[in-house]
Image (cartoon, rainbow, N blue to C red; front, side, top):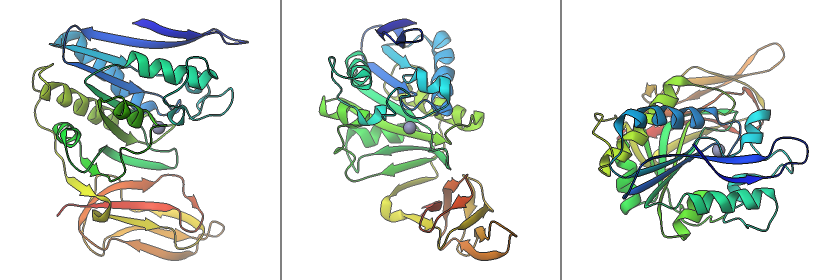
Length: 298
Ligand SMILES: [Zn+2]
């Protein structure tokens, strides 16, 4: 482990950006986790990959950053605690800027690679089936599909936001992918393992590591092929499905009840066949908030 960047902190030990490097030469892959300090599945996935790489000895170079936002990790919060800024909205950063801008600039500078992956968990209020988000076509979509994660989500506009790490990498001419799995503030070992195997398959597809066997992609979709259910009114949402469940039209996904007393005030049912890719984990909802997403399985 190498400390590639550090920053004096006023009242505690200095901030340190840690990088683990395996192998040497090309191709070079960089995998970043924990830009958001409360996204434990992303950290665990990268650490699982690190233990695999200790025995696999890659034919090429793999740089791993298991936890960028260490101070957020200490406090169990997503953002950078000193000024409550989102590190993933601070790119490309500034070596002479504020603390998040300096850290962002350091992450970008030390993750120089042919292929880059930014690993996240879902927000604390939703659980996500492990998925890779990729552009609609091109080399990045090929790389995304090679991961064999349960969901490939092809998105328009994926290249536009350069204040995020994936966009900044793309602006710098690197192939970059955005991976998400599980829920913030929660360690889910099954989803972390799925993410780690997906990352390992990506390395295999680039010739860095031996093949580990295929994954199972159950849905390869665009936004139009994802059925999004939002709360019809405020209330308490009780899910009846878990992420990864296969559903058919009419399947009960969950119901809304009045928080005090529990009277049922509405049901949420699938309209088409698919796999449940997102489920609300924090049940108190306001109208129009996300409850469930179902990705079409064709
Ligand atoms: Zn995140």
